[in-house]
Every structure is written in structure tokens, then in C-alpha cells.
Length: 483
Ligand code: SIN
Image 1 (cartoon, protein in one colour):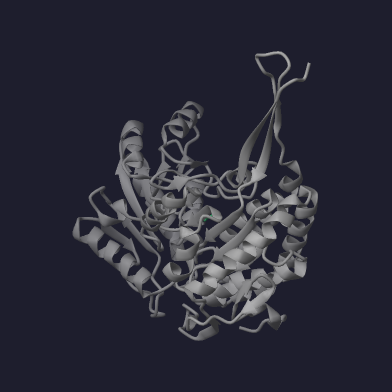
Image 2: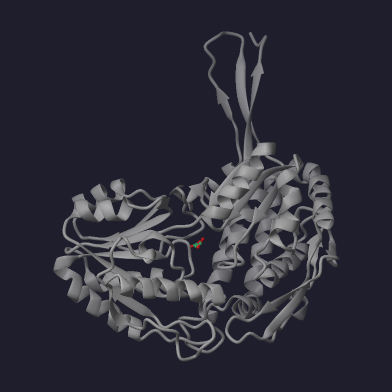
């Protein structure tokens, strides 16, 4: 990996305005495509991480009192810097995360779009003037930043999940302590370098590298940290929420999914097959909104399977940095083991293999695009997120049966369906238990749309006009004696 701007490659946490050498050992950041070393980063101790709270807290008063328009200008500058450094940021992300370079470039733009979006939302934070039942009274509401925010972000979208949180929090007037995933610290540190260049005051945006429990423990227990925002698994989200209860923090959780993708017999089958490719194989199947179960009406099952298989056969698998690659490696051996376990379990329980079903000849953590038909709800891949390039097809006969299957999961992040029937469009959209529904499209994520789930997929919404609300408290002012 060759960066044009080598100063984007940082090896220490950003605390205040200091690149702080960690005293908790080092983290070797490896390229999932070939195991080569991408960079080494020092890890903070619990004490160093606890001290970072003081920096975020000290910065809060001045930052929260700046006009929203000024905060927005800095967010805009940050987003522009990301776009200026798109090639370097993408190369770094592909090296440490594995996603194809074109997707990494797309993620840089997606990530920057949250900063641009929230740059515009920052000046729009507003309260209300309310009518009162009595004479001589006036009631107003102020919307004020909650305070210091702790953000814990995942490896699958190393930049976008961070800017989706930081953009909203900083627009609201909060300051942030961010802890990126251990697998992808370098992208987050490059983002921190650009935040400094954009001119954010010291302590407004801090990036802390270290072992998850070690560095986030002090934040979770601290009464100064008023809000936790997390993207990751449901299991960890539950633990974080429990731990946050002692200090009654505000909590936003974007957790696991088990998205159904329904294809009805009246659908445009080519469009539906394209939709599965776009959503299922994005990031090598490692997104929370990936369809995990493709439910296909029996009358079109064969025709749809053929269309999907032809498209999947054409997917180019390889190291993300190679030209034209559409599917990279999985993040690590544990991810590969899970995909392998899901495929063998499905085959043992009666699924039919139409494509792939084995590790890719490239070896390492590469897995062949896999197509299975005849899948059933008792299979592991129907119950857990596979998080890999496996399209599992489940047959159904009626709309009612499809909805029953789709909603038969504790999760409710995303759902998709394809139909050309207008009445069905509304019936199905209203009945699906999910925070986001793609109708005749596999692409549902953009800065202007609310992102978040229901049921075990979490709470709160990111992005959109709602995103800033997660970082604001409402204060009611009641004035008497106004006759
Ligand atoms: C995720 O996988 O959690 C995020 C995907 C997205 O923003 O589209």
C-alpha cells in the first residue's frame, strides 16, 4: 500500500491535540487478503483512556456554545478533506479491511456525505414556543447537546460508521471519544488526522485505540460520559446497555440483522436478481443490512435461481486492491469458519448447492460466492447472520406465508421485497417488522435516510434529519408573570 500523503498513516491515539503513545502494548494491523502487516498502532491503558474523558469534557463547554453554523463549517471542511484524500483513504481501508477498492472509494464518499449532511443540520437545531392553557405564562423548549459521547464503531465500514455518529454528535454540540474496531484502527486515525487539519478544537474529536473492554470500561462507568452510541452485534449491544444503566446514559444501538429479501411472482426477476447482487454481495456479504434469507415464490423459483446463479458466476473474487475485483476476503478466520459452518449445516439439513459452497481457491479467508436453494427455518443460516457471500433461497407459496417467514426472527434491521403490485407494495411494507424496507431496490443507505432497526436490531436512528436528535436533550423553560 502506497499513500500519497504518508502523514495520514498514524500509529497512536488522538487525545486532545496529541498523538498519544499508548502504554498498553501494540496492535498489529494485518491485511486480510494476504496477512501482510499494514501498520502497528499503540494501545492505550484503561488509565490513559479514562484521562481522555477529561479532554472531551474540557472541550465541551466552548464547543457547545459555538453557533451551529460555525460547527457546520468545520464539518463541511472535514468532509471536503476526506474527498480530497479519497484515493489514500480508500487504499488504506482496502489494505486493513479487505473490501474491493471501488467499494472503498464509494465508502469514502458515503462517509464524507454524513459530514456534509450534518454540516447543514448543525445550524437547524431549534426549539419550540408552546401555547399554555393559562394566561400570563410562556413555555419554550431549548434543545441542548447531551455532553460527552462515547462511540464504539465496527470494522465493516471503518469510516462511514464513524462519520455517521461523529457528524451528528458534533453538529449537535457534543464532543466525542471514539473507539474504532481493533481490526481497522488506521482508517479511523486517518480520519482523526483530517479532523485536526479541518480545525476542530482539541478534545472535540478523540480517537482511542486499545482493547475494547480496557479502553471503553472507564467511559461506560463515567457519569461524565452522557451518551453511548454503538454499532455491532446484538450480544455486545445488550452488555453495553446493561453497563450504561448505572449512569443512565442515553443509548443508541445499531445491532445485528437477519434481513429477509422477498421475491414475489409478479416481480421483475432481472431487477430482483440485480438487487440481491447489490445488497447481498456488498462488502463481501459483511454488512448488517445484507439480505440473509432470500424468500422466493415457488412458481418463479427456478427462473429466479438461474438469473441469480448467472450473475453470481460472474463475480470477480480477489484481493480488494486488484483491478475489477468485486468480492474480497472475509475479515478473519472466525468469519470464514462461520460461513463454512452455515453452509455445511444447511447442506446437512437438506439444502441444494447451486454454486460455490467451499473456500475459494485463493485460500486464506476467501470464500466462493455460494448459492443454496431449498433452505428452511431450522438451518443456522436462517437464524444467525451469516456475514458472508452466501445467498440462501427459501421457497414460499403465499404472501401470508412469506410474511410469516420474514418476521420469524428476533431481529428487525432491514428487509427488501420485489413486486409490481401496488396494493401488495403497501401491505407488505406495512407488515414487515424492520426499521428499513427496500422496495424494488437493494440500496437503502444514504445520508438523508434514517438508518436503524427495531426488535433485537437496536434503537435510535442515524443519518437524516433525525440523526442529530439522538445527541440532544430537550429543556423546557416556563416563564410566569408575562401579562
Ligand atoms: C452496516 O452494515 O451496519 C451499515 C451499512 C450501511 O450503512 O449501509
